[in-house]
Every structure is written in structure tokens, then in C-alpha cells.
Image 1 (cartoon, rainbow, N blue to C red):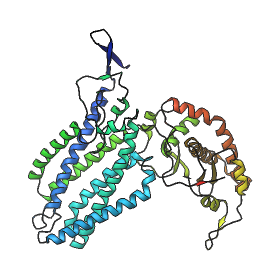
Image 2 (cartoon, rainbow, N blue to C red):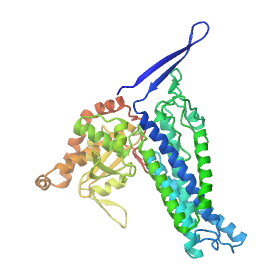
Image 3 (cartoon, rainbow, N blue to C red):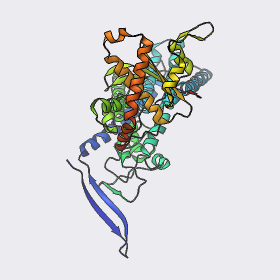
Length: 469
């Protein structure tokens, strides 16, 4: 069904056109309402579950086993416990950001949902802790604080990446600060390019994400303090107050908590799946290029989003989203590649007698901005990037590894045994590089034509290294 539009023009007394408004009848209006319902459900359930968890923290152990506090504890002991929790949370924040900081942007959808998993798990630990002795209880409360800290890092970083994605016209500050303006019809100012139409295709991804204005062109996704989020949170607190006053038994409390957390995670999973990122991370590169090479079909970001897994194994090479061909490491140091080429001395750390001379490999990639080796026995692709390797060169290196793993998997066992592995691998890399180089520029142009942003580097999930040749 085609999209129908109605255009209105506004003129001043002199007859000059001052604004043009367009009403867009979206054929997917039912889907828009469904996204709004998902947004409301996740915020509503989270608010009530948070009240149940807070009650568990505040209740004394003598009044209910669901409680976490100890009625006989001194204020000093309570303060020291608070200091311990805060310290554990800050240490976890530092370590988590240091270890996984690079991967937060390319895998923002995964970490967005992981943040909710961390937060909901922390709620469960709060309610579980009174069933254990005091020492175990302190450990559980400290772990709960760690999980909430991880939630803060993952949610904050993924929010920044998703905000940049929706700020199609560079209006990042406006995107995070403006209030949602809700009007009864889908009118939007066509002469105002700062309003991103794509931003209306996203549901709220938890309390510090975006609010949908599906079909409401004047509305832009806003910060959590927007009117819709405030109303939903207020309703959740009011209903939650009624729930916590009526639900008191352990069975009823746990049944309510598990139900609310299940709704919260399910709705957030649906919201994350609704986001169509326009950058190519590892998984999306696998999906896009395998479809392009295998079927000569250029998938759009929306089509790839429907096949994308929220949680994917790091570095996996999949063909058309299902078949695992191997794994890939990109942006590693040269020593990692040399260990695959030869044998490493554990005592000195040196690499002895590589089966393939490094000079041969350098000659093969003299015109490229990367070095690549495929360890056939481990089914692992190792990519070393040269200094100032561009984002397109990084993408080509990843696709080269994907194609090499694909072609090697198609070799018959008789062909594999006919020649030594080093010679066979060099021929594999040379032939796949030649074939890919002939078509890669065309692939890039076709992907950009359907909306992919290939200027953003989203393939490295750890701090990468470069070599100077």
C-alpha cells in the first residue's frame, strides 16, 4: 500500500509562502501504535518492579524475609555497607569501561539490552539477599551494586551511540533535550531539515533513551525527562504504590517481580530489534556482504536489522546469518600474526622459522592497507592494519577474511591434502584478494546507495594497533 500525503502551504499577507506542512498517512500505522505500546509497557513495568525492589531493600529482616535490611544493625554498619557498595560499583565502572569501552559503540544494541539485564538481575539479587547469612548478604548486595554500575556504563555509552545515529542532521543536542510535541495529526514542517524523520522509527530504549513520536513529525525523540516518560513513570509509581500495599507475601512478591521483569526485558528486546543502524559492525557486515556476494542482492539497513541477532559471538564469521565459517581478529599486533605463521618460543617470546616468509605476505598486500592471514587449522582470520588504514580498508579486510573462510570451506578434502598448507593458504588469499578487489568498489557504491554509512569504523571491539610499513 502506497503512502498518501496531503500538503498545506502557509502564506503571509503579501502572499509569500512562509511554511509548508505535509500530512503523511503511514500504511504501517498499526505498527506505529504497537511500538508506542511497547515503550509504555517497558517503562511501566520497570517502575513497578523498582518499587518492589526498593521495598525489599528498606524492609527489616524481622518483618519479612524478602527484606534486605537488618533491624538490629547500627547506623555505622549501614554506612559502611553503603561505602562498600559504592566503592565496588566505581571499581566495576572503571574496569568495564577500560576492558570493553571500544566495543560499546559498534555493539550498542547488544549493550543497550545488556544494561537492562544487568539492572533486572540486580533487583533479583536485592530480593534474594535476606535468605542468606550476613556475610553472603553483603556479597550479594555488593554484586548488585556492581551490576547497576555496569548498567550505567552500558546504558550511557549505548545511548550516546544511538543518539548520534538518530541525529541525522547533526542536531545531537536538540535530540537529547527537546520535549516531544504530540499533535493529533501527522503534520511536520517540511522546510525544517533539523527534524529527523528516521528518528520517529525508534521506540524508547529504557528510561534514559528515546521517546517515540510515531507519525508525529513535529515530535523528536527526547531525553528521559520528556512529557511522555514523566507521565508513564508517574503512572507506574501510582500503580506500584497500590501493588506494594497489596502484595506482601513472598510468593506474591516474587510472582509479581518475575512477571514485571519478564515484561520489561521482552519489551526492551522488541525495542532494540526495531532499531536499524546504518553502520556496518561485524555482524551487519557479514549479513550485508554475504547477501551481496551470494545472491547479488543489496540489503537495506532495515532488512539487515530483521536478521540481526541482538547478542552475537565476538568475531564470528557467518555466511548469510546462519552458517559459522570461523572467527576473525582485526586490529591485532603483528606478533599475533607471526605466531600463526611460525612457532613461538615460550621462554623468549620469539617466533622461529615461519613457514611463510613475512616478505611474501607483505608483497601480496603491498597495495592494501592491511595484512591478512588465515589459520586454516583453527579457522581463524588474523588482520593486521597498517598505519592510517581507512574505514573502507578495514571493511575490505573483514570481507576478505569472510570470503576466504567461505571459499576454504568449499574445498574438498582431496584438494586440501594435495598441497602443503602454507602454499594452499597463500593461493587462497591471493585468489580471493584478486576477486574481491575487482568488485569491492562497486559493492561499496551499491551499499551507500541504499543508505549504509561506510565512513564510520565499527569493526574493532578492542583497542587496535597499527604497523608502519
